[in-house]
Length: 239
Length: 210
Image 1 (cartoon, each protein chain N blue to C red):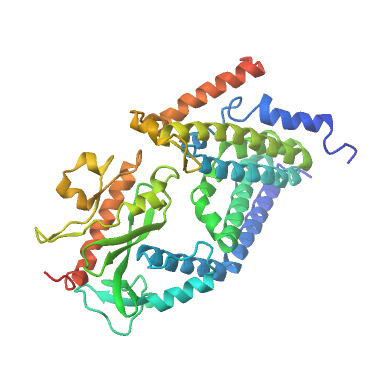
Image 2 (image 1 turned 45 degrees about the vertical axis):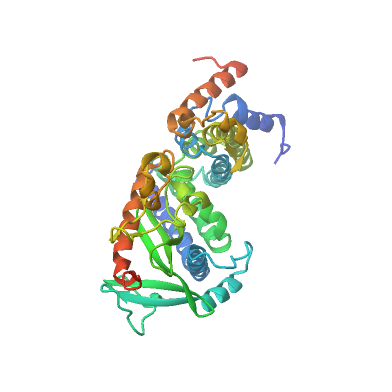
């Protein structure tokens, strides 16, 4: 068999392509329902994490139980650019075509609002970062933040998925009552306490060593989404 | 097969990959990932396992079809096999071991482009039977892992004061004025460590410049 002939080379290349393409399609399509289920569960887990449940989820909780908690505690809404609730729409129905419509998740405990959560998405250094930000019922204080999907370098920018980084955001404020203006949280270079004055600590958090640009991305995406959701949140503030 | 599974020849393959021709210290391959994913031990371990698995697996596949691959397009065929293998595994993980796949995140892509995988395919699997190729992949993966884990341990302890996420440097050290070495977190820190490891390994194994 002459493996160098043009004819053989061509046929071999076609076979290799077809075999790998079929294999990958089968894997991708066959596993799609399972993958989508995992992703949906992951998103819901993260919303629950961002709103800091009164009784946190057990670490090894089964998927079905997580969904049950989610359904009983979280109310899903859709709001428009002006911050009005769009009746009859759920976040699940939103597609890429729905411009100026935004999902909003309300965490209620015994009928009382505990937190408002919304997705925050934007560019890091290498990849798009996906997360959720939750504010307390006062629409000013951050209750929790999560980042659950990214492609940043593990150990550097990838640290945004770690507890220590996300915990930094708890208790920070996105609105200054004194100055009556929005103060979306800024990720600084180094330790916040060393970099900004005491008054400004309320909206600055520690950066990640050797991941300044990821931090910059986080700052930008928080700024962007806090401004979008302020249309809704500003109506809740009692000032 | 007329030869024992771990005959002396096969043992030599294992020893070569792990020590005498270690992919990092002897062949100076896979440096990119040795620098990028060793800031923390856990990342280094995950990358090591992934790479060992892929090198061994793709070595076997390529070795099985080695006599049919047209020489002109062998590199692209190797790359296709590696990518298809890695992506299939990634898909399976995403469906059945979601947490693991989240931890692997970008590693999967890094494995495809790792020079060691292609290096072993080209240098070994193209000319040797499947079992030998499997051993070769395993040995080279282990050699790579050993170096990666060593660098990972040193960088995490001195760069962040932790090991596998647990604090190992006592708080009293920090109180006494000790600070984490910022350079260890950055790529240059890994470069220095790597240089030192290459130096030590080559002194012991008696490497001679040809």
